[in-house]
Length: 157
Image 1 (cartoon, helix red, strand yellow):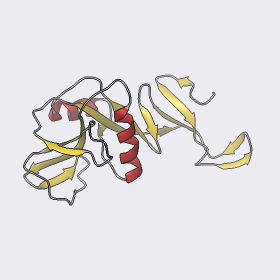
Image 2 (image 1 turned 120 degrees about the vertical axis):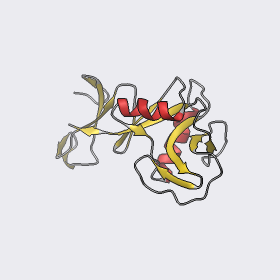
Image 3 (image 1 turned 60 degrees about the vertical axis):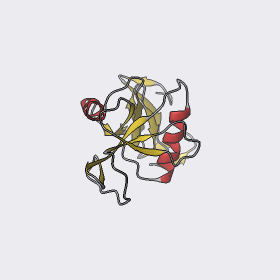
Image 4 (image 1 turned 60 degrees about the horizontal axis):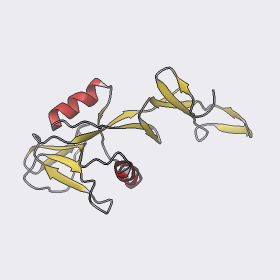
């Protein structure tokens, strides 16, 4: 299989970083890192940026139905990637991410990781695409309809 070729319902790329390279074209211990078709891979995760809009609960349910969750942003590198992906055509506006508050000011990620910055009165977070910097999170109410970013673990085969 050649890098970028499809294998079933997944797009796979050769993962050289995980193996020991013995010869220029021979690798030991590495495989194909795969994401579902239409998803973007970064490191060990796959990302889906929706074209349609839903409220926060529907967005979370939609991601879960695809075997993923609303994105949990763990690093500056991941934030930069998502910022760049949201700027690509087709032009869209806000994207729900997996940061929410069950109670005012008690923010956590959908994977139950706490978030330690005090936020405003709203209970969900979007990436605001029109912002010109990577510091583009904005708190919103959960009933608003926005695009979503789902995240799933990439599969190595």
